[in-house]
Length: 333
Ligand SMILES: Nc1ncnc2c1ncn2[C@@H]1O[C@H](COP(=O)(O)OP(=O)(O)OP(=O)(O)O)[C@@H](O)[C@H]1O
Image 1: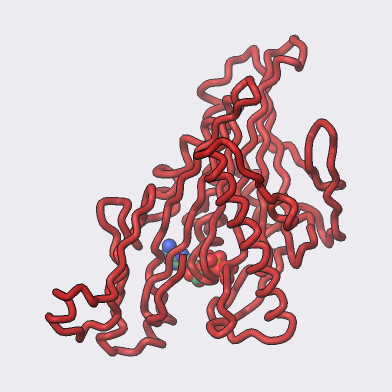
Image 2 (image 1 turned 120 degrees about the vertical axis):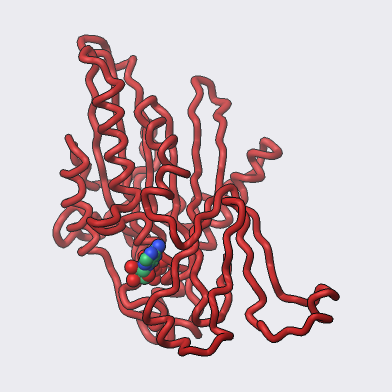
């Protein structure tokens, strides 16, 4: 969703929680929910806006799901307001988080149930989507003081293991972490990864050939690996974000669970995919040129392909049939 052009306006990012529940027939049930998070105005933005009162925060969150974007023009007179000529806009989402929310609040409100379901053989995907600088990496990756959804989800999976998996069960967690940069896939878990190819496997479907899958035994273990991976990620400084991600990062967590001493045919497999998308960009806002401008165009193109797939999935959910154009970009494949 677009952001208003007032410099001091807090930015919004969207978390799309695409929860695909696998049932033991080919009649899969899926549900899609959208949460929006408003990030606080940064000090640098406050300074750029100066002390002018027209540069106030214009986004409000109401009832935990309505986002009101106030008319940036405070001076609008009463007649304009009663004649409904105000540019105030209201949007309703499944959930909305205000500037006070921490990553843990977003996690508890929107992701916890999904992450717990993965240990019971369910699949889920979480996308952080929003314009550049809106707080996607902050939400998905976070900091040691405020860990993001990737770390919190892994923590949950290991807590489920400790609390709900009995001694007679085998339980393994594997992770892979890749980035899609300008339609090329790189492994973030290996030092200086070369480009990787997508292959179609008759059993496993689309997979990335040569991608490293590591077995993890604790959430703390993955924290270090994620930090390393994030340092390898392609970032650049733009006028809209000093450390802007130029690639989409995809963390895939696969949980396998089966009764010990039994055939693996009884294995439950759950997969949680957490995607920190690169930000959609307006060239005028980022002031990019050359390679950075080309990166931005590629980012926007793959985000459009993703939006088309999500729209088609929504239609499929409503009408039962719709062609989903997964093949239009590496991200959606
Ligand atoms: N909820 C928040 N609270 C405090 N600071 C935040 C919050 N969200 C984002 N920020 C800060 O805003 C800046 C931009 O955030 P971030 O890099 O996560 O944006 P992004 O959406 O990932 O951008 P891009 O698409 O360009 O990579 C960072 O300095 C980050 O620390």
